[in-house]
Each structure stands twice: as structure tokens, then as C-alpha cells.
Length: 231
Ligand code: IPE
Ligand code: IPE
Ligand code: MG
Image 1 (tube, rainbow, N blue to C red):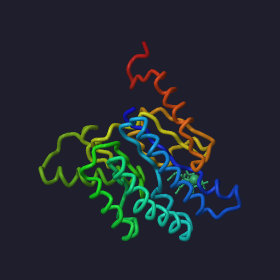
Image 2 (tube, rainbow, N blue to C red):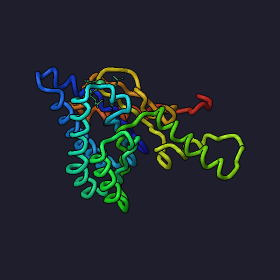
Image 3 (spheres, protein in one colour):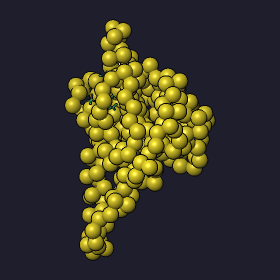
């Protein structure tokens, strides 16, 4: 398995169903992520990505946004940092860091530098991530480069992909969305063009490796054509 992605939705509903504050759902969601990282490492997955906080999640009330970002900061600085060391994980945060609080950005930079020589599973954590913003950012990078080199040749897909946050990472083979909705909510719109999509009713804090193994087994039975013939 080269790349498996998780859209970690349903934290708020998980808490509400138990008459708990939504914050508890986000904390349980972070714990589920730690569990998933260990499981996927044990399955020898090459790369795993997780959608944790989108640019569109800024629309939520400020208390909810600060609760979510607080949980993320705590987990990155503690559990994820420790696990990255233990399992040699190559953790990379993808997203628009300009939108995140300074304290969280400091934690992200520290984590990035701690993981720089790691050689194990690649882990992409999408925080302050939006697929549309990622593409705009890629265009800005390419435009500046092309102006500098006075390059007016037509843009190629390879060039475009090389300027995305996911440069040098294979596109997701599988995307699993938790929480009952069948949509991608602005997650890697270009990279998921040929991904196999799985939508689960389970809420993310109820993550269970057995279900993921079932999906991976199903994935291996699917013939992928990438636009070629189905013969
Ligand atoms: C996913 O859980 C986490 C984030 C989007 C940050 P939600 O907070 O969206 O939970 P639901 O979908 O409201 O249950
Ligand atoms: C998707 O969940 C984003 C993350 C899990 C980070 P949302 O709860 O934001 O998605 P919508 O708004 O229901 O599409
Ligand atoms: Mg949601």
C-alpha cells in the first residue's frame, strides 16, 4: 500500500451522542489518530495522510476553532512527537501555515526539524488545509518561477503536481471518510482523481483497524485502469 488517506470526520457528533462537549470528541479523535499511526506502521503502509483541520473549518465559532487547534497543538507536541521518534515516522504538516496561530506554527516547525532524518512511514497531517488554496499556492510558485526564467511553455501536469504540498508523495490509493457523508470536502482534489473512495458511517473516534484492513483487502481486488482499457 503506497498511500492511504483518512478524512477524520464525526468527532463533534461522537461527543454530542454522549452528551459530552464537542471538545471531548476532538480529543478522542486525536487519540484515534495516534492508534491509527501505530496500526498503519505495523501494516508497513508507505504513506498515510490525515485530514485534521480544513481552511473552511475557520467558519466555525471561535471557541470551537480554538478548541480544535488547541487539541492539535497538544497532540503534535506530545503524542505525535514521541511516536515519530519511536516509529521513525517522517511527519510532514501540509496546509497554509499563515492561517494558523503562531504557537502552533512553532510546534509544527519543531516537529518538522525533529523528523528531518527519519526514514519510516511518511505521515502527512493536513492542518489548515484546503485543496483550492493548495492549487492557488502552486500557481503562485510556478508563476514566480516562470517569470524569473521567462518560461512561456505550456504548463504540464508534472510541473503542477511538483508545486503541490504533496510533491514527491504518490497520490492516495485509498481515501476513507468517516462520519457518514459521501464527499471529500476540499481534500486533495487533484491527487484523488483516481483514488478508490470508501465512505463509512462510523464516526472517526470509533476508528477500528479491522475495518481498515477489510478496505485494504477489498482495494487489492479492484482493477484500476487510470483511463486505460478494462480488458
Ligand atoms: C471532524 O469532526 C474534525 C474537524 C472537522 C476539525 P467534526 O468536528 O466535523 O465533527 P462533526 O462532523 O461535526 O460530527
Ligand atoms: C471534513 O470535515 C474536514 C476534516 C475532517 C478536517 P467537515 O466536517 O469540515 O466537512 P463538511 O463541512 O461536513 O463537508
Ligand atoms: Mg464534520
